Length: 291
Image (cartoon, rainbow, N blue to C red; front, side, top):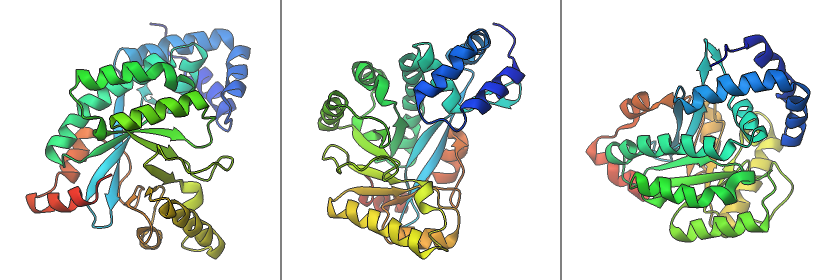
């Protein structure tokens, strides 16, 4: 494997750090073709060699119990943290994003088994999938679940609201939903206005909406309106980005679960199990508040 070019990684990563469209990122990669080929070999090579970890950020219900977690990709090379968005964009540029997504899903499924055994059988792990590869991903997704004997109810696939969800994607999402997989819409309210879909059981209110709800009345009202809109459609709500006690108190009035540094940063599986494995008398509460 080629030597990791730290300087080139930092230079290109900085250029795409504020870009939302993959096409714009791909333009940058194309303009730095030789360097990106080297980064592909070292970064994606490290991933497919298994030299990455998954971290988990908990979902905490109103009673303070952990009912699930978001799985988050983590990669360090030569002591440098590699931005996950960069990794998946680079994989997309070289046509390897589906393989990368399935590779990480395989690890998440293997690790999630222990969450279900030790924390609660109702534990739900959320896993991000880009809509661009979703349709091709679905059949192999089922195979990964079968390989690990994972109940589909134990996984929630996150799709970003700001992404373009084609009719074909929505049709396949509905089919997975009918088969038992939870469908979760991330970044609710951040993209162009869309109807609240029947196939998605749960919506995430993003940190951008939550920031300053403890200090700014207009942001708080906006947050409340979004939550009430979802509740009118009988949707579960996860509120992200909660960082202090006042934000937490406001969010608890509307959220089914809360995610944020107020409770925990993303942590490795071993630390997660140590922190959130409940006592026996807590299990019934968790079951009553699961997805």
